[in-house]
Image (cartoon, rainbow over all chains, first blue to last red; front, top):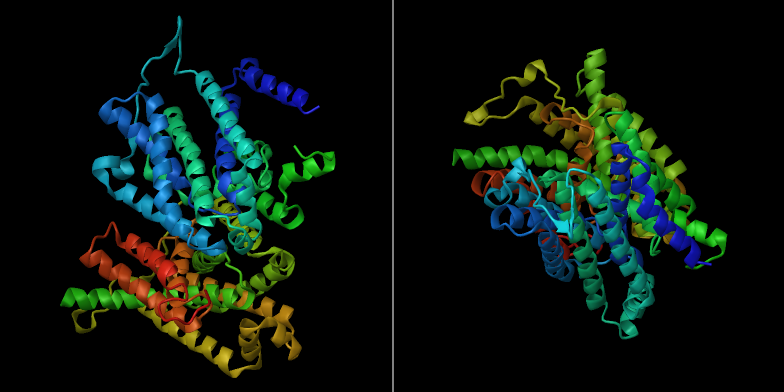
Length: 314
Length: 288
């Protein structure tokens, strides 16, 4: 029973952009997938491990800048650049994790916020590397062809399929982790860190490993960001609000679930992008509203609640 | 030497305003054990309140505090009664996320209503700074400083000399024992939250002639407040005051002697170091 809806979902995802030429709608779908990707990777550490990070934009920004800088100054293909962004993001997660995981609960959250702000300020002021508030711009992406088919970078389609692939990767990773020993350790840490410690779990290592995985995927997403928008500046990719949006999508969709982030992203991103089209400012009103409603009335999130109603546990 | 004195003076003046806002955050934490991420938005609302009453009614921003502090006191009590009270028992992380939602909601409603434009409030007496002993002191900042001292003294007297104040301190020490001694803890929570909100808004009113205002200004201020309350020890009122002045000094001395670009970074690094090595705060009075 679970295979059929999954297969239908995959077919719809792959065929969807062929049904419309409306570029707003295509952009909307890409953004939904992009935020699914971010929500799912945040969920790895925030949902399963219960470590509410308010600093994930750090890894997004690092991924975006690594891709940009490697391409612009070293001529490295953006594909490899994206991967490099993920890896360097993951490397940064190591010291950040080792520092911040000495703290618990809200103190951890505040520390991640401080680290993210430090990184943002460094990016803003290290002008030789990042061009500071001016930002970096890619005018053309290098051509790539599969066999006889050349990828048309001016169309949104290649970005859509790239986003689908990345979102699947992130959700697949979440699924695998949730079934693995690491997932069990993480949930033990979330439920009671002292008990987990007493049961012989290396709680620091568990959390650092999860953070590194999460940072890797967010770094990839950063690379995707820089290719799709072709422009990065510190306030665009290191902003606190990005970190906060990731948290909201994961929580509203459903903490520690595989499909929660996509549900959260569909609901929140669709509403906010439509709002952004119509009004000039304030597109995050519904993020705040949904967050408050979810925490108060269904802390398991929209997908978590649906799952209970459907009586499934997949 | 003159530069040093000048930056110490401006650091202390700005720091006193930070301190007042941070005291609001710290008493709420002390009594309810919640970190209110929407605290910065309360400051923002105070700033916009003073801005609009000046622009529309021609009311002096410093006088408008007698309107906005009580209004926000009431608003804070209502927020606690109808929004927060049911959520706090769900745990500190849920409450943190809930107040993050509230913060985003208020900031974006403000963006929607007032757009993201930067605004300034210009006062006729703010053009020329006073120059006692050759040190430039912006007049609005000086007025704000003395008002902040007056308000903090009033708060100190309230906390130490009145029954409500004693009940607040008792609840902060131990809610169960306070309840056993006949303190209505729910009511004290509500009053404390109102007080915290009023302090934030009052801070905003005092800051408005000296700072740009825009709907997301709370984001910057709340981060500064965290730095301050952690420096001073979470939950400690004297700690928050000392932390506020300290951060003001670090920022203004850092801007002069280290670099303007990295002045905010120094505060964050200090914050991380204190969080890691002295979680009870520099003065060892907070709760870790």
